[in-house]
Length: 120
Image (tube, rainbow, N blue to C red; front, side, top):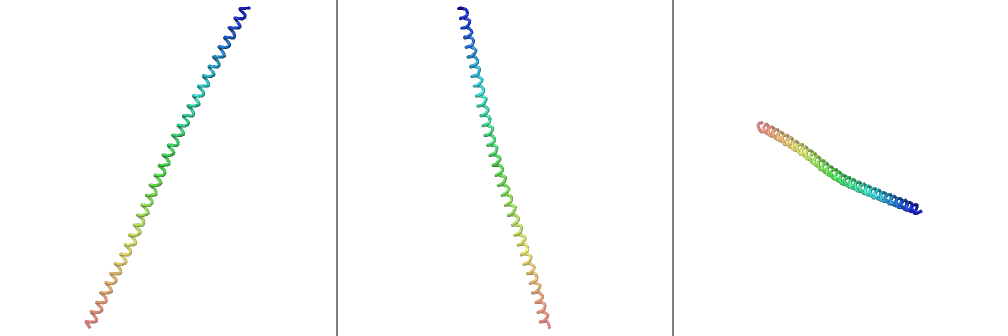
């Protein structure tokens, strides 16, 4: 009977030790799972942070490119207007020169007519 009690006690002690080991193993696995989830969340945050930084850089590049393009367009437009203004000025100068030549010719003709009239 004592042997039976000792055997039961030993069995109970073994069962208790096995349950403790099982619980410890479960705790360890749960802690490892928690750490893995925390690491995964950390990596996801870092990834999202890198993506946000990269998006901001790309946005800044796009804005800079748009600004540069607008400046180039403005410069080209200014050059075009200068060219048109120069063409207009050249046309006006040409017209003035033609008028001056025509006036000079008219004056010469008038002088010739006057000289011929005086010569008669």
